[in-house]
Image (tube, rainbow, N blue to C red; front, side, top):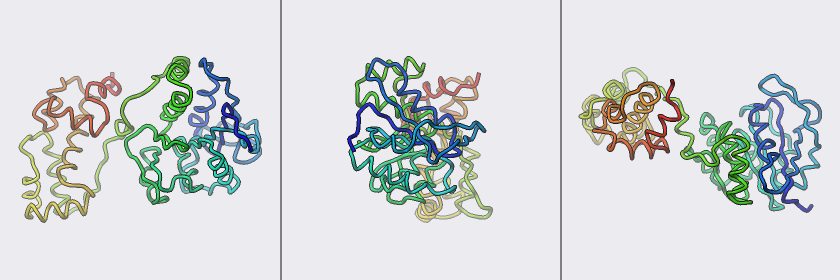
Length: 319
């Protein structure tokens, strides 16, 4: 069947989050100075569908209406582990991709694309809380942790919730130019392009530290002394009462990364907490997190979080 460039198909799943369901229709129906899009919203089954907000919606189109769509979007789906996706949906997505359409998974919609086999051998992302689950269920996917969206050409996936806006605006920018995307962003009163990735939105993790384990004891020691600039890997090995070489090997086995990577990450996490909860100057935040000053902290902060400390504070400072 011929795909029409201005037809956008949206497949709504039962018990989906209402915000994610609304993102794509809102972006493509906005008067943005580009082409007039025909947005066709269909449900995964006939009849009213529930949303997580308790609001019931009845999509106006049949699934067959999406066969002409050049962009097919699966917004946030129900949580992984629920009912499997109906074969008709998976076949529709495979046909769309085979016809050259762009197939998009917003937030947990990536799991549906994974079920359809469209993400194998590709890069993809989803909500940060479900990244490990995506890896577990679909080991053939190269899961990307710290992005708002991933563009693989004919396949696009986005991180959680509002990142769907970023992905849809990116599609407008990619296909019709920055003027169209910027006009849509102005109409929606959102940034046309947000810097950084979703790591900046991740809460501080509390590592599981079993009592009596040498590496766990070293982690506890480090978390209690992150403000000490003298704290180094040699000191952590001493706290674990093992040689540096043994400590490095056992730490990698337990944490999946080097002790230095882990320590830098914990210091940046502490800096994130201080930037969002205090009015301390950036240099003071850096010293309280174990860095010599703000200049020394900035490259590590930007690499891990995706934005500089000042931008992070501007976004997350609790007034």
